[in-house]
Amino acid sequence: MPRGAKRTLAGRQVEGRTNWGRDPRSRGRSGVRAANPTRTRDRPEPETTEIVLRIASARSAEFEAMFESEELPIWNDFTRRRRFLEARLVRVDGGSEVRDGIQDHILHIVAADHAAHEEHDGDARFNAFLARAQRLQPIGPFVWYGRTIFERRA
Image (tube, rainbow, N blue to C red; front, side, top):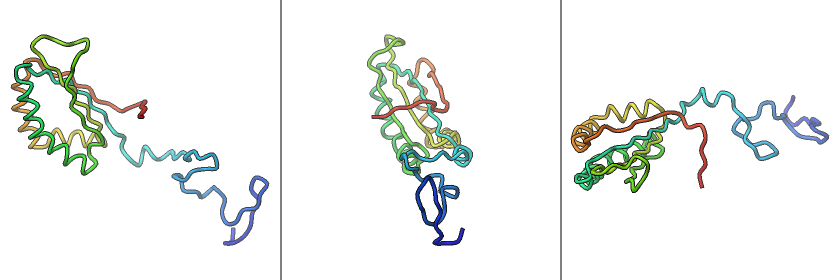
């Protein structure tokens, strides 16, 4: 249609093009973002990792200090570069798997994609930290990772 031409759409006159060539990121009249079926193919999906680290209670303060001085700078690097979208270390206060002599810590990471997860796991700084941290773990960790399927945030 020539520039400036008028067209009737849904009982009203509009100028220029109709929605057929609309940017898929734009919002329609209802305010809902238009679906873009290629979006998930264009960009890898974030990956969530949950790890329960089981640290000897007597060495928990040592672990946390080591984590703060060695792993947090790596997290700062990865979050600054948007390789990590979220990163948390939680000291467990209670739950169904609490054991005497063990202080559990939940490690929660949302990585930009699986490649970001692999990049972190291959980082020399992380591997140096991991070698020392494993000596503080009398029991091996629980590890899970995957794609988030439902989420709510306040």
